[in-house]
Amino acid sequence: MNAAKTSQDLIALYRRHVEIATRRAASALEKTGFDAVVLHAGRIQHRSPFDDMDWPFVPVPMFTYYTPLRWPDSAVVVTKTGAVLWAVEASGFWERPAAPDWSLIRAGLQTNVVPGLDRVKGSLPQGKIAFIGHERAAAADLGIAADDVNPGPLVEALEDARVEKTPYEIEVMAAASRRAARGHRAAAEAFMANERSELRIHLAYLRASDQDDAETPYKGIVALGEDAAVLHHNIYVDRPRAGSLLIDAGARYNGYASDITRTYVDDRAGDAEAFRALVEGLDRLQQATIEDITIGLNYESLHDGCHLKLGALMAETGLVTCSAEAAAEQGITRAFFPHGLGHSLGVQVHDVSCRKREPKPENPFLRHTAAITAGQVFTIEPGLYFIDALLADLKAKPAGDSVRWSAVETLQPFGGIRIEDNVYVRPEGGTRNLTREAFAAA
Ligand SMILES: [Mn+2]
Image (tube, rainbow, N blue to C red; front, side):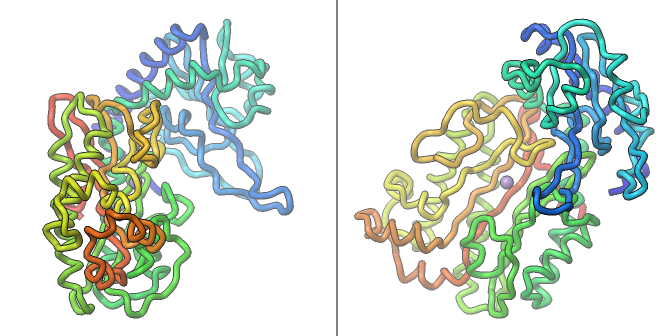
């Protein structure tokens, strides 16, 4: 990606972001008894010891938190008084690393471009130094003791510091949503124009969002018809008769991710009307769940509340004959919506520090179990799927008697629905839906 023109506003926000991050890191260092920490970008990883292919390079998230630079072996050295970037410029002739946006990076971080990490060793600050990164050999090269590599309390404190997003992070995540929204629009148009190859829809998404597959924050899920019942469907096939498309695909901007899902219906398909009612109902339910977000509420309560809303939708549309409460309490909604309502989002698609306690047994896959606090960004992604194995289990239980199985059978060829937005919890109250505003602008 080429972030060729970075606005002065974003540069100013980035400068403040680094200041805030460094202030938070200083208190993490203080608390854990370190004087400095080296955040290492990592080195290129081999795919397998049996051949000479490498994975595309993705820097260690803690490094990307400080800088969008994507040069292997680079490092940010953070002390209690400031942060310095050591940008290691590769000298080989096989490849050229991504072009950095120096106007942004240098505005936020004192930057030294050096030919190798050995130049950093002589300039490390005095005192007890920690190293964070996956490349233990680099820590050894810097003379940092193995015990001080990824020390648990410091890693935890620095991850906690990433939960409250800075205004810079919100802007780059909004940009990541806008980039993805352009891809989603193109995918929807391809589907409406009768494209029934998941691969070609995926390629349309990549083209319109202007990214190569390896640059995306996660492998895109493109599911036509029944494939939507496979939650992470990404082995693409052709489904010539599919009446629905579920696409879960994101984009990066300055290293930050968006994570967006939409479900579309082809009205010409048989029984499309019944499925469309469900899609529209789930869309309303998703937005109502976002309206329930308040600072101090536990995210798991939001998840449980969403199950109650799903029970109501299923009763309304004739999928169950029982009440919304009964559908939620008896585990019926959980057979149709088995995953979590969402997860924190940032540099990492499943961002850090929001699942420090286990969810309740009925919510085993929930990735956010913390209280909702000011400045969080997370996804809200309810779903409703027709998954054979889960439905067979439900059918065998007494609760299964409340399901109208003939209606389920009619809808099964559509696979399922998921609708996912990226939501920012404003410190002043309320939320900002980065995804809906991106679609409005796309
Ligand atoms: Mn997600």
